[in-house]
Each structure stands twice: as C-alpha cells, then as structure tokens.
Amino acid sequence: MTQRISRIAGWLALAFIAFVTLSPINDRPSIAGAQLEHFAAFALLGLALVLGYPRRTLAIVVIVVGSAFALEALQLLTPDRHGRLLDALVKAVGGVCGIGAGRLVLAIVQDQIDRARKLPGQSAG
Image (tube, rainbow, N blue to C red; front, top):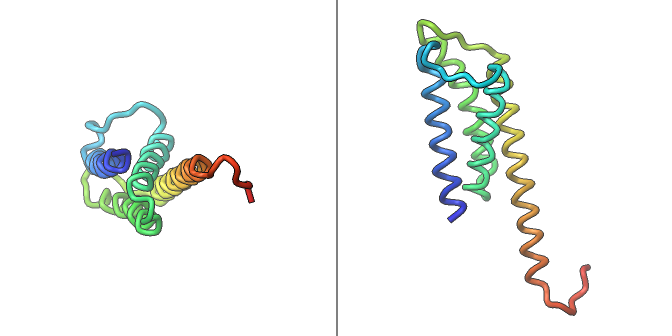
C-alpha cells in the first residue's frame, strides 16, 4: 500500500514539476527562493520514487537526474523561460539527496523488520 502511494506521489510530483517548469513564468507558484524550491521539489521526487520502487534505484537516478537536465533544456524552447546549468545541477543534487534519504529510510525499516523476525533466544551476530 505504501509503495503504491509512493509511486503515485512520485509520478504526480514529476508531472507537477514538468508543468511548473514549462509553464509561463507568471503562472509559476512561488513559496521560497527558486534554488530552495528546485532542490526540495526534486528531493521529494527522488524520495517518493525510491520508496515506490525500492529495487529500481539506478533507474530512479537516471529518471530524476535526466528529468532535471531535460526540463532545464526544454525551458530554452519557451519564450519567457531560460534554462540554466546551475538550476539543473541544484535539481539533480536535490533528487540524489532525496534518493539517498529514501534508501536510508528503507534500510532502517528493513533493519527493524529483521529485528522483529528474530526469535527471542537468538544471538545478534
């Protein structure tokens, strides 16, 4: 159930990021500085996708980092937007941080599951 919700959240986040990135600059919502928004949006994207697809980390890295650079490049085709290498790098770093956080969450959860499965008299080694 959690994986399914994470998958849906991840793909919806990517769709929203693409919409906001390619829409006219005046239609773009703003709640913080642009770099912080870029970092946070891609961190949430990476986190959601890695929780949704825990065995597909490499594919998620390709999707997240690739979409960061692709969306910045696509901004060059819009009349009122501009693609910047710095923006793409901030997005990619945010995505990788989100993926790392997701992998950490998965490792902690797996450790807790492993501990719960141990029989009461078993050694820790």
